Length: 52
Image 1 (cartoon, rainbow, N blue to C red):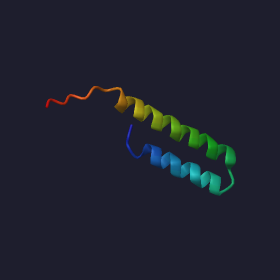
Image 2 (tube, helix red, strand yellow):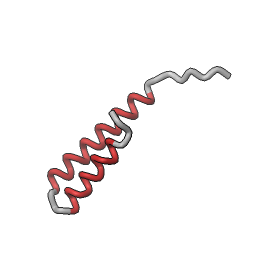
Image 3 (tube, helix red, strand yellow):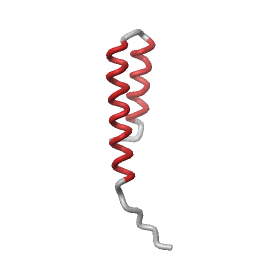
Image 4 (cartoon, rainbow, N blue to C red):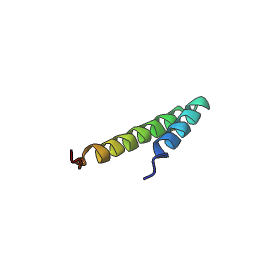
């Protein structure tokens, strides 16, 4: 995945909502939330290798 993907899908969701395509807007908002949660889970579940 790429880091710009949640921003791109969020923009698409905002554009759909702006042009009164509510169902598609909500669908893309849900996709954005799922991508964001997947990225969070990917990064939060790794152990940090910090040697102090």
